[in-house]
Structures are given as structure tokens and as C-alpha cells.
Length: 561
Image 1 (cartoon, rainbow, N blue to C red):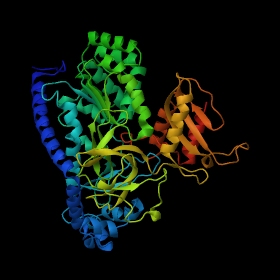
Image 2: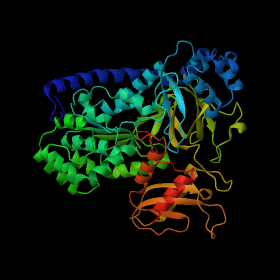
Image 3: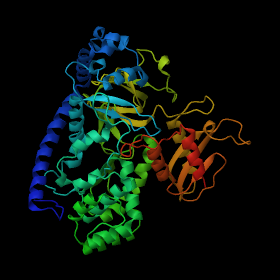
Image 4: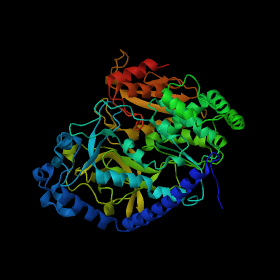
């Protein structure tokens, strides 16, 4: 019995989608069996992985200079190898980018691309990704344990489409290395995980639209035309929040375009793309009336009214400090679950997957045993240690963790990183079989420091949440960031170092000298400003919680109400 089908699927499309779901269901189940076996033998899998990595890299320039050949077991590796940061490997990565593959990668390794970090404050880091690791990352994304939990009750019977919210990456400033390899965000690699386009509501030609506003409009239009849509998916949840806000703001245009079966005239997309898209549109007056009635109900519970068959919304929101995006999305999603799915990073691709959906607002991730060799550096008193302070034996292994303890993740990877500080602080919550499960808390690099007090992002966020609890019930936090006073002109009344808190709120609240209220939409404009003035990627963008440049702080100050 077929449980559901997108109404505009042709019979050939329906058959292809059915075949895809049968095959994908088998692949997901097989991958999950492998994952379960690995999680039951986490320490054994990790030890074998580390030995394989060390042997594969001992003859690289990095391996010879750091005598990796003397560290062919877990204990000798941990005794002899120091903890590292990006500056420790940057020169080797640059040599690989210039064509000297053996500077960091083992014999026979071919490079797929260089993955880059989001660069939201103007500084990119890049990492070589081998072809084997790229394939592993794509397969991990497509067939992660999360997908078994999401699809086991529908595949292969449901023939409903999904909306993939994807904005094309703009051309990078340095898109090709001297060795001829592409440099791009991890999202460019994961685009390979999209699979056959029949399962997506948006036509493939639209996935190349670079303008964010135009791209989101087209995603919204084609998604709203399919009343049987089952899932809305994006790499980051912020993209789905942004899509939903824009749908609400542009509802009149969207309803009109659905009714008449063509794109609005002022949508700035290439003529050839417009022509291809309009061949797939036709007037749908009944659908337009239904969508218009759904919008009339207001933003609360909007998505299930627009898409009555919607089962879940997916997108990562990194750390507790971005939980506001989940709260906002939950408002729009109503009873539809909002799920964080997987945890990945530019350094190694897939890191962990969701296996427990009981608290979607605070997702718990299970580490993928074969993703990297994991170690855990204890964080005591919310203080992030300087590199020179960290003893070689200080990081812990998985079986040494304390429940509720907070740790900075260290990884040793097939890409040549050795006891590398990933930059994420996590809380250990228990084990899935014998594999650690963690909550992502905050970025270790986001430290507030106006006068040598070194306040972590987490401590500041918890203080902000305490303050929010005291505010009127009709005041909701939309977004925030904070800047140390030394980035801004000093008032004659403010001689002591302090912080400036920039808030966008839904509801009235007075500000004081250090709390700067911003108008509605200010953080969207701030995001647009950072995308225009830095090398930040729109697909990978995460709002900086700590402002690090005077130029960004002054931009926010000018928006102050």
C-alpha cells in the first residue's frame, strides 16, 4: 500500500523514486549494521584506525620531522605527540596546496579538494581532503544512522518529495590551488549526496542560483506547489529559518505566482534559468487558495499548514548558543519535529550522528568510530587552556570520561592532522553501546576578553538566558552578538573595560549603555554585510557570537536603535 505520493510526479518519475528508495533503504540498513558493530567495539576500532593513520603518514614530511614511526601504538602515540593547532600544520597544508602532496599525505593518496572553514570573520582555514575521505564523507552523510530513524517507517513506500534548501556558493577569491585543486566549503562536497533529483521539490537548474534571496524564493515557490512535501532539509537550520521568514514576507508574490504559473517579473535570475523553470510551472488556482489560507493563520504553526504531509525539518544548529534558531524554527514548525541530524566539520567531514531524538532542542550526537581518532581535553571551570599549557598525557580516551564533564575535542585524521584541536567544546552524556555520546556546547575560540577575564561563550550565553527569564513573557530573543569595548570608541562615562551586547528582540525592552537594541532584521543585514565584506560562505555561515573586528562592531553600533 502506497502511503503518499507527490501529486505532480509522472509515472517514470514515480518508478525512479521508488527504485531509489528501495536501494537507499537497503544501503541505510547495511550502513547502520556496520555502525552498530563499530560502536560495540569502539576502543578496538579506534586503536586500529590510529595505527593505520600513523603508518600511512610516517613517511610524509610531517611524519619524518615529528618521528611518527616511533608511535605505532596508542600509548606511545599519546606519550610522544603534542597537542596541535592550525598554525602547527598550516605550512604543511600550504606545501600540499602548492603540489607537494607528501608534505602531509601518505603515498598513493589523491586529493579530491581543499575544504575551507566558514570564514565568517574574514579568515579561512583550509584542509586537504583525499578522494577516499571524500567518498567516506558523502556516504556517511547519505547513509548516517540518523536516516534510519527518519526513514525506516516510510521507505520505500512513500513517494513524496523533499525540499533541499541550498544556495549556490559564490565564486571563491582563490578557488583553485597552485596544485590545481578546488577550494570550497564542506557543503560543496556534500552536494554530491543529493542523489537523483526526482526526490527534490526544486528543479535541478535552480540549485545553481547564486543570489540567496532569489534562490530561497524559487525553493519556496516549488515547495509550496507540492502539498505532499514530506521533509524540509538544509545543512544548517538557519537556512530553513531564513526561508520560512522570507515565505511569510513574500506570501503575496508566492500566492500570485502559484496562481498564474509563472515567476514574478522582478526576480533577478538569468533568463535561461527562468525559461527552464517556467516550463515546469502551470497555473494552480486551487493550490494558491489553499496556500493563501495557510498564510492567513499567521507564523505560528505555519509549515504544517502549508505542507500538511510534512514529517520533519532538518538542519544543524551548532551548540547551545544557537539554540535560539531551534526555538524560532519550532514556532514555525508547530508539531513537526525539528532535527539536527549530523555533526560535521571542514577538518574531516562527518564527525557524529543523531541516534536519540528525545530532546531535539538539545541534540545528543554519537561519535562515528571510524571518522577520526578521538581524544578529549578536560575543560575545567569553563577555562580554555593555551596550547603551551596542555600536557601530552592530559587528554583522555573515551573510557576515561566523566558523565556531565565538558571536553574539548581533539582529532587525529587520515588527512594528516595529529592530536588537533577541533575547536568544539562538548559535554559527555553517556555511551551508545561503548561509543561516547556528546552535546555540542560552544566554540573554544569564542572567548570574551575585555580586561583579561577570559569569559567563555557558554558562560555569557547562560548569563543571557538567566536575564531572558526575568524579562516580560512577550519578549523573545531573535539573535545576538557581543563585542569587547576596545573595538569601539570609548565614551567618557565608560573608562573601565566592558562588553557591548547587541540584541534583536521580538517585543519591547529598554536598553542601557552597554546593551544595544537592534531593529528587526538587523542580524539578517549583518549577515549580508559579512558575506559581502569577508570570505564567508552563505551555505556554511554561522552567526559570530563574539565580534572580533572594529569594522563589524562599528557596523552594529550604527544599527543601534
